[in-house]
Image (cartoon, rainbow, N blue to C red):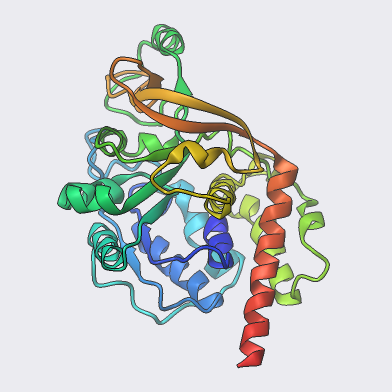
Length: 349
């Protein structure tokens, strides 16, 4: 939600729609209403929000649904805009299209205008892979790049060491594999299919977006931030720990880092959505590398890892470390500036 809050206030990003996963850190019952609340708050209720597929392509255990992540983890997140950071509900209905169909519908509209579409992927890649399967030619033609939050890359030596140290970790899974990413673990088959399709992926690892929330992060909120937004922002970062039964020192910004990172790349001079070599144009990323890796789908403790594979892997750029101060300054100033600009425009009407 922190990432969506930032993107809704970025004047340089033309948001065409939201696809909400139901098999990651957003339960179906809560995810879409929460996005609609934020869209209403910032005057973008006309942007379509679609329910995603209720199940991924990957069978993680013998339960259906898999209950991974455990729903107990998600209650505080689901109730966040209702109980913890009160935000008025929206009466705007969700899209009548399923998430994969909405993606393709937006791609068709873009094709008519001679445009490309970039995707910010903040959860499992289920809906995106489903759209690719439905119309592969259209999807790959119009897609610029998929900016992926949380896909960690390991060497084959690290893979072997993990397999040797944890031989009992295997299907059926009751928890995410160690050092892996929830976004990838929730549906690694979808991640593999999307990667092997030849789609452009640009990846920020969970090591890169693991920036901690600190109690004094209000120092990054500009003094001229509109008062109501200052209060909402402060509640947003201070209440997340209590809502999820964590100390604030354990809470991370995660997807919000990916949103700022992607926005900086899109805003960079000479950006070419079909050429991901210019993806290094982000001031918050401090460690870039080119990777050739594939998703490990072997049953065991490295299931869902991205593992370096020069023979069978696909190439993509990876950001593996970010600057916390640069991120926080950009994140908070960007939201406040967006809110202020919207208010000014409304007053002029």
